[in-house]
Amino acid sequence: MTEESPKRQGIGSLEIGLHILNYISTAAKPPTLKELSGALDLSPSRAHKYLVSLLREGYINQVNQTQYTLGNSSLTLGISALRRINPIQLSYEAVDRLNEETDKTVSVTVWNGNGPLVIKWLDSSQPISVNVRLGAELSPLNSAAGRIYLAHLPASRRKQLVDQFYKNSRTLPKKEGRPVTREELPAHLEVIRRNNYCAFFGDYLPEINVLSMPVFDINGSIVTVITLLGLERDTDISEGSSLFEKVRACSDRVTQQICGLQRD
Image (cartoon, rainbow, N blue to C red; front, side):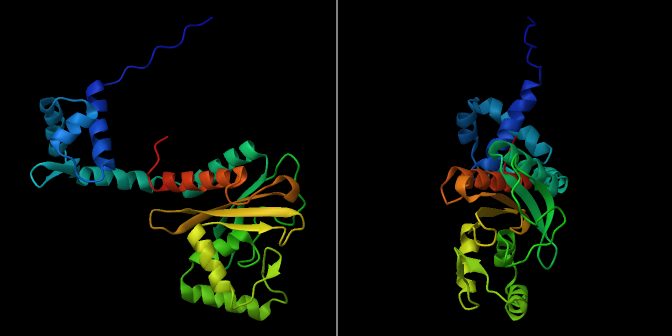
C-alpha cells in the first residue's frame, strides 16, 4: 500500500496576498482595513503590510483614504485571462460532461448569420432518429436553438428573418403543438428571451423533446447554444425537472467560465 503523496508546499505569504485580492474583488463595496483583517483573520498591522505591497504593484488602489479596490494591474491580469478563454472549447467540454451525465443526445450550435450551425453533436447510447447532424444549418424559427438566437437578435435583423420565414414557409412555426401566427410570435420570443430557454415537446420531431439554453459572453451576447434531445417517454424537460436543471447548470457554468466568474 503506497502512502498518500504529501501536500505540495507553497508560499504562504503569496497565498494570503491572493486571498486579500479575492476578497476585494468579490466584496459588495470597497472594504476597509478593519473589514479585511476581520474577514481574513489577520491582525490589522499584518493585513496593512500586504495592502502596501499590493498598492506598490498597482494591484489595488485606495479610495476615500480608508477603502481598497482593484487597481490597473488587476485589470490587466483579468483582461489577459479573458482573452485566453475559448468559448467554443468550454462549450465542447461542457456538453461532453452533459452527455455522460444524462446519456442524452446533446449538441452545440453557433449563429452563422442566418441560422444556428451545429458544430458539435454527441449521440446517446441509444441514438434517436433525427435528420440533424454535425455541420447542419438549422431553421431560425423551427429549431429551439434558432428561436433563442432570434429572441436575442437586434430588432431590425430579427424582423428581416421573421418576415422572410413567414413569406416563404408553407407552414407556421409551432409551440406545444399549436401554430404560432406572425402576430403571436413577438410575445413568444420575449418569453424565451426573459426565461433563457426554449423547449419543444414533440413539436417538430414526433415523440422527441428538445431543450436549448444559451451561453453568454461578458458583453451579454450569445456565443453558443447548448441543446439536449431525447425520447418523449424518458426525457422530461419541463421547467424544474432534473434534466432541465442539468442543462441550466451546464449553460450557466460555461457562461461563468467565459466571464471569469467561476474558479475551478
